[in-house]
Image (tube, rainbow, N blue to C red; front, side, top):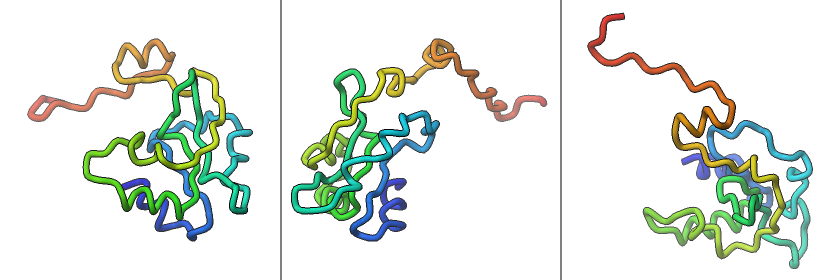
Length: 126
């Protein structure tokens, strides 16, 4: 849904960013000057952050027209790797800590981030 919303706001020739809704904005400012800012027949479809040798599919800047084509070919359940993999994306190296995988409370603690407060349990006394 976030990708579709980004596309609706972009003219066809402008880049659309693909990033997780909880992105913290810690990416290197150099990464904002990407291949997708270039024009011409040899220009790539966009750029993607690569950390620790792995493309970060949720941290890409892609021209709207190629992204629309890729999404049109997507099937329900396809991964971003499968959808975006065929695009010509320039790799932008990023420090591994920018792509840290945080899935559990212990991952949050290791990253030095304060976990969110626990949600009240239904039926529990305040």
